[in-house]
Structures are given as C-alpha cells and as structure tokens.
Length: 346
Image (tube, rainbow, N blue to C red; front, top):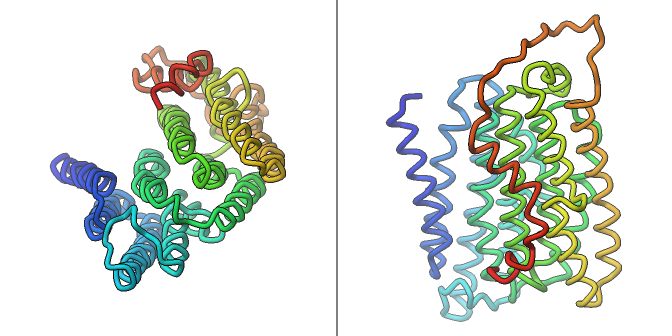
C-alpha cells in the first residue's frame, strides 16, 4: 500500500474518532463511526490473503449492523421525546437497542464472536488499532449515555465477557487470538463499572490501551504470531523479552505494576456501591486471564525450545529497541506509585 493511501486512511481514522467523541448529536456520532469503519477496512484487507479478506468482510457486516442499530435507537428516542442530544437518551426501548449496538461495536459477550476472527486475519499493527483506537468512540458513547442504561444488563454482559474472555483464551496458540480474548475480558471490567463510575471506566480504558499497545508493538518488533515462534525469540532480543514478561503480568493486573491500579479501584468502587458479589465474581474470573498471560510470559522467557525444533535459531541482533516500545513498556510497569496524581487528573 502506498504512503499516500496510508496517510488518507490514518487521517480518516483520526477524523472519524474525533467527530464521534466531540459530537453531541446522534447523526454526527453515527457519521464518525461510519468514517472509522470505512477507513479501517482497506488496512485489514491490504495483504490480499483470503483470511484478511474474510476478516474485513466480517468486520464490515458486524459494524454496519451495529451502526444501523445506533441510528435506529436514536431515531426511536427522537420520535418519542423530540431529542437528538446524545445525553438525553431516555426512552427504555432506545436504551436497550443502544446497549446491544455498542456491545456489538465493542465485542462484548454475547456479541463477541467476530472479534478474535477479525484480529487473527489482521496484522499486529492493525490488530492494535482494532483493540484500542476503534474501541474509543463506542466507549465514549457508552460514557455519555451511561446514566440512561440499565446497570443489570451491563453487569451481566460484563461478567459473561470476563468469563468467556478468560475461558476461551486458555487453549489458544496464536498471540493475536490470545490478545483478542484478553481485550474481551478487559471490556468486561469497563462495562461493569461504567454505570457506577464512568470516569473510572475511561481510566481503565486508557491504561488498557497503554499496556496493550506495549504488548502489540513488542510482539511486532520480534515478529511473534504464534507461541512456538515466541519460544525462539529469546536469542534475538533478550532484554525486550524480559520486559514483555513484565508487561504481560501488568496486563494481567498483578501488583505492583500499572495494571493493578484499575482493577483495585473498580473492586473498591463496586464494594462501595454494595455489589460486592459481582466484584468477587469478576475478580475470581480474572484468574483465568492471569493463567494465559503467564503462559505467554512462560513461553517468551522461561521455556527453552527443544533441540529438535524446526525453527532456525535467530541470531542476537544489536539493533536498538523502538523508542515507542520503551516508553509504553516503562509506563505499563511503573504508574502505580503515582496513582494519586492520575486520580487527581481524571
């Protein structure tokens, strides 16, 4: 793909995201979502591999259906209340349809089936965009409409997402699919808290974006698409592999790393809101995620490949690590001590 085309798609993604997050009218928000969808499709299918074309088709169908539901929900609300303002969503049917539409956009259970398949058909960089930037507009709409949405529905979806995200990631050998199920699991944590503390859900999203970007870029720099490839990369970039181990543990939410901060605050807030049972269940379900992060970390740093391996030994190269990877990895590991400052800013 030539640089001019890439620039146009990158600018379209920026425009679509900015349009949705800054608008207060449903039509403008919908327009932004559509621009985003159309801009990412060529990036998904640029390799011309049948799996990439299939991923782009699946992504288009799901996002088109979700956008239609967003439009239908806003029109139903406007029909009954005369309001096109995003924060004035009050009709119960509209609220229910919007919850379904945003769950489809984000990949929350039970509308999650498309996400691992699309991520598997994309490159790691496009996978990073799908897991982070493309989730930002729907999360913003969820944030703006959270007072109108039913907490019970969101909580059920959240617990199911945390359960299925952890459970289905256990048996995977492809790094992109593991990160897709990790994303579904993290979305569960955001969905469970958004009705009680929307700012905390956004903080969780920002920190998740930070840690996921660090993992995706690390995997991209060592070109690891499968666990078997990950086992042989320790000869190539030993220091990056060690940092990847810690970033994965941060993504799992282990203290004293950055990933512990949102989980700790969410459990604290849920307990304050007297839904301690939901907090206990989602905390226990995060152990499933911890298992497959540990598996990834084990493959990356602790396992030595057998001598009969079919992989060629990759020689150690003295190439400097990407600055972006270094900065994101450092932030993924060391933000917990400055959590009071983060909370004051948010």
